[in-house]
Amino acid sequence: MPLWVFRISALIGIPFLVYMFVSNDYYSVMLGLLCGAIIVAAENFVHSLKFVPMMIAIFGALLGFMIYFLCDYAVYKMNIGDISEYWQIYKTAAAGILCVLCAALSLSKASELEGINKKGRHIKIIDMSALIDGRVIDLCEAGFLEGTLVLPRFVIDKLNIMAASKEQLEKAKGRRGLDIVTRLRELKDIRVTTTAKDVKGENMAERVVALAEYFGGSVVTVDFNINKTAVLRDVPVLNISDLTTALKPVLLPGESMSLFIMKEGKEPEQGIGYLDDGTMVVVEEGQKWIGKRAEVAVYSILQTSAGRMIFAKTKQAAAQE
Image (cartoon, rainbow, N blue to C red):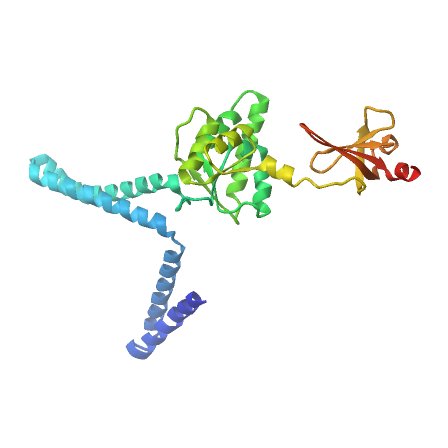
């Protein structure tokens, strides 16, 4: 609100002051209106600038001017005829080139930490496996991930190599990972940035964990090896697979649900269906319901190393008992 008050005051107040105290002719009032518009445009431009990149660019330009000053002093001291003559002709252009070049180099170097102004737990390093998996997009859109998501440059480079591979599966994974990178960058409700910061490591897992350790952040992954490496180095891990397991619906014996029976089971009269999370449900007397949705009642749950298996009966079969 104060900004709009300032802008309206500049657009109305300056022409009014010109009319009252300078001149009441048409051209003076229009000139006052033009001055007000220039002030509003300048304020809007400055307001849209990012403070940190602007200060880095200014610092780089000052560094370039210092280099120019040293070169000018060196040419003056050497006092070599041809060099001094050419320097006097082109020194203004040299000053401009040095300032712009140093400002650009400063900004490119600062891109390693673009959007990472402060280290800490809000920094989340996205692993390649999480990008290929793709569920990180759903977590972001649902608001379960916050802070700054950091995409390491070496991870994106690896995805590019995979996308150019002749092997179809690897090529598909690389392209999917790059597609997820593009979709992450399009998100508006969460900060996503890329870092060119490189760290040492024998493999991708160690490099990702080392990068998270450098920033004091955490790793977003679905890879068990990265999970294990991060735990050993005391780096926080957000494992999407663990989250999926934790969010599996809790079913107890006796509960009922609607289930689509997809195929027949190994035993006679059995039907097989699946929950939304992929959990297999073996339905007794479910063969006649294949291709249809049936109301089933859970009577047993078996937890194995491969996951859960749920055993149920159709309500008709349960009622007959």
